Image 1 (cartoon, rainbow, N blue to C red):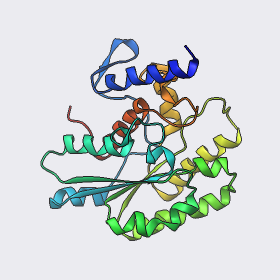
Image 2: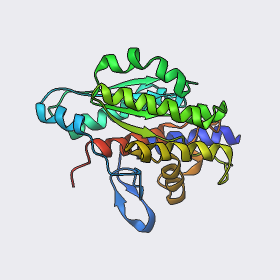
Image 3: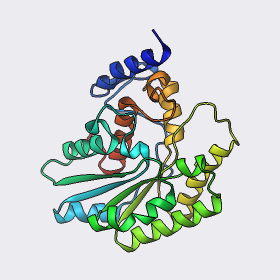
Length: 249
């Protein structure tokens, strides 16, 4: 059996297990995908709170590139935005919840800005989860340019009344501290701190999941070594859902 085939089969075996309680380090159990520090700061989402308090629909837009669109997933229902919608509906019974997938493979921050009105703002979201920086790193967009574009995007989203959660680039094997790719991860974190926007620490969280066996390393990424899988998308949705509507204890 080839390594690629083995990885694909392992991913298919692991994904259904994410729907059941997981055994994590030390034998403790958790209904989900635990991480010691999934966000850079506690989420404060006044627009989400207002939507829920008013009894109206909760609209979330997932803006990003291929890992938002769902490349590597076995189908649309296995993408993180689709799983996020299902989780939020479960945790907010009786509420109308819609999570729109505005991911386009290969998009940089500049391309996302160009379609912000058509793909995001027209939906009047209470929350935008903006996954950004990965393709900017691959295309070597200057960090100053990326910073200016993220500032503009966050400003436009806030002016439209939306809360924002930034999502940093994912964990990739073979990227040592100080590598060019790591500088883009750090840049998104710095922008979140500067703008007062929480950042989903995706790179760190994925590394922790692999280390703790929440999602084995072999099931974390697709055979292309870049895109996520059903298993890791499910865990990503669980983290985002926890920022919006924590599970009942």
